[in-house]
Length: 384
Image (tube, rainbow, N blue to C red; front, top):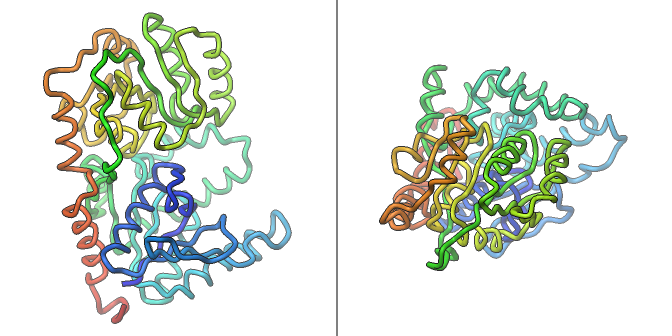
């Protein structure tokens, strides 16, 4: 099969991890290429086509940055995207992360008789618009282009969700939300390559670590309040401010002697910092299945989450603490945390069974895409 992905994926394909969604697409693309499929990635940030060492063809959109600003979206960019996807003539097109331009991919898939898969990146994708306003749009109201993107996404995303040939979700909670909307979906868990992971040394770990964007959407203001109530503990903050909220509390934290602000680090160094920490702190109010949770457990580190417990795995598998939105409970967990006997082994076993990119999981990914391709084949392409 020829399978097409798109987004800012080139960096992740070359080991320079961007966001969690981009990393997941890159791992999926590499897996499918390794299984013998022809994989094509369209990336808007590159200017020349090339092939990666994994055999993945990475393509630009010709003329994407030409034209008059403000008008070129309609005169150059959207038409260029459409023609690029049509010319690739894939058997399957896969989209992930809420984005109005996925409708162009959907239209191209229908044009060439291909299958279209939509992957959920966040629970927020399928919750109410009121929740998206609270946790996402309200932090972008001064960005006119962001407002346009959000409005356009609200118009087209429900249509794509209901008309996709396959919808991939990250955990049982997302599947149940879609079931209430009479939309079928398949759970395809986030994966992780554990070949370079190490568990931190056996010395007493003292630091708690926060990893991610420093902004309103990730609950950075709540993290600041947690730190204020936990003056007896040390914290590492890995990430950079991305909005006014992030900048405000980033500057305030500079005066805290128990807080180390590292800025953005390489993926390798971030993993090392996590492995040497006592626990990972998450204050994000809305997620899908955070990569950083999986990375922490693979390092033998528990997760203390203020809001998010994807599929209730933190509580069911005893992988940390879910504070159910109560900052006092999170602070109490920080004060009382003690690794139960066998936690490291339990966490790593959970990762092995559910997220490790081993031969079994690679085969599962291949079967999922083949199943979508072969489903209702009379309506799709007859040859690869």
